[in-house]
Image 1 (cartoon, rainbow, N blue to C red):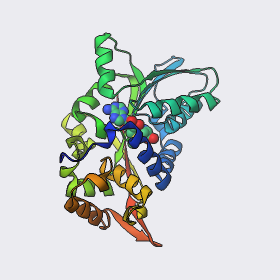
Image 2: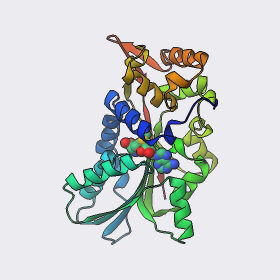
Image 3: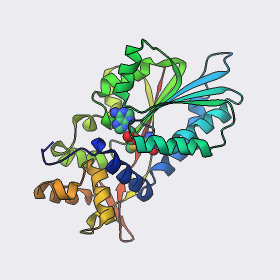
Image 4: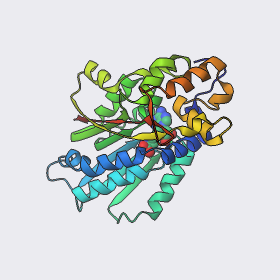
Length: 288
Ligand SMILES: C[S@@+](CC[C@H](N)C(=O)[O-])C[C@H]1O[C@@H](n2cnc3c(N)ncnc32)[C@H](O)[C@@H]1O
């Protein structure tokens, strides 16, 4: 990465703002909800020990918890009467406090408890190893967070090793044929860390893990990025490039290249005067 630019993941406040706006301008959460409603029930049907009455769930990179609570609701309805212990790993303090507020409002009933870990996945792994803990989980999800880890291989291997018998690991990433991959492949070497270039399923093939992929379509309205001086457009550009204040800090030739690339058919399409970025998602389910 060129030295004038700062990764968005290192600035909690700016990340929170630009991710929030991304959610407002995209169908990201609608797409996740569709998977939760239509596919997740089958995925979670077989989790849990035979004859057991409790389930351990781990969310890594949970954000503000909206999607995690939807997942927990589905687990509750698929396994009625089970006690669920939900553990959260999330480094951003703003996301954790939103999540806690959401839990307070949520009418979950008495059969659920939460453990909060305000830390990265790497710090969580270190903490467990220091404490000699080897707690296992029936369901682990890592939704749109593997871009930020140091090693994709090691992170997937570690969290897979935490699966209980019959457990499932769900990874959600942008699809390889989506707009992000085109943008990152074209210009990303100048502004991204290397993990963003790896395809999760290729890593899974290398480490010989069996998986099942579902692809669901999603769009992201990036029209404001092309309105000079538009504050929302700047925040959205930060999210697309994962750089804080990309428009102000990136070299002029890189800015021009990124804006041009975003309009290419590999990244987006124009519809009713709007520029709609391809935000398709891969849902990767890995067994125990
Ligand atoms: C794109 S957001 C996704 C949030 C949530 N899963 C959702 O789908 O709404 C990525 C989340 O991963 C968190 N994150 C960033 N680096 C992380 C790391 N190394 N370990 C765990 N979480 C991380 C961010 O703080 C953010 O909340």
